[in-house]
Length: 457
Image (cartoon, rainbow, N blue to C red; front, side):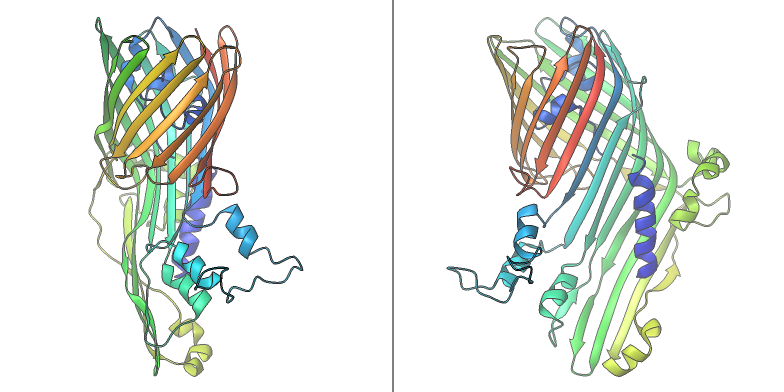
């Protein structure tokens, strides 16, 4: 178990300092991703390439610097931490066994009810478009960037044991998960304008640096009268080097009065083949490992023909009591490792997302946006739950726009965002902050931050 955690942390530490999910610039982030219709120029790529056809609004755009960072969990908020884990007014631990006012449950039971059944999850996503390699000209665009995604879960049973102890006869589920993905992309996008609408498409080449994940886990931990029993297992698979392709398509109407409509599907085709010899990373592995010992970090044998590996970790215990357990901790409380076969090439589907949106402009004062979206898959940065996003942008003073938005549904339940910028003649600077899982900093379970500098005319 310790080996598995150490490898995950090492990989996460390396990748966190590097690059996450489908990219959105700071303007779109401030509008809570209600961007299917209102994105323009190079920012259209990744949301709706049909918006490149509005060359009367943006003829040329280029990213100078752009970064988006997401960090979240599915349980802890600042308000919850301050209430239960920062001590009372005297600095003493909070009395978790006491009853909640007006309710027939204890604070400890309340805390456990907030923890999802699939465990405590933490995640990180980072996207960085490569500077000077993200340009739109007319109704064409060339873009590139790095995407990093990481999500780890700890079994709910561990927290039940910490708060309630190991009740005799009660089985605690040990299922867990981990996903780590690092991909670079290079895309060509275009839009075809018609009299009353635009259609567009993006073709992306996906060059995978590495991925790792617990693709199978289970078993339980149980305390019996005769001792401890466990049959937990985790299969940890990883690979380096991947080739893939993804395609986005989109449609946007011209303005109909003050209204405008659009629809898009991101990654309608999307896949990456990992771990074979026919990819850029594999062909240049010596150069890559001169900078980063990627195979050593992932625990992949250094044989030049091997680019993937899978290991089965098991923790088998039967009737381990306090005496023999404490005297032989290294023998009884350890994960046994066994290398298991992995295919020569691993095919991974890239998550698809459906979007439909509308905007309404009130004179030269406000633009109101609404987007409805859902993932066609349920992993990495996609979620099958429908998400409704609403955004507004105050444009009376074009030099300093003010933006805000909120969203409901999707992976976080509730979101709120705000942002602003400075727009000069040919230069835009924007900044935005979004709260995930709550409508304020104290109730949010995560945040997303974005900043970008862009040349535009």
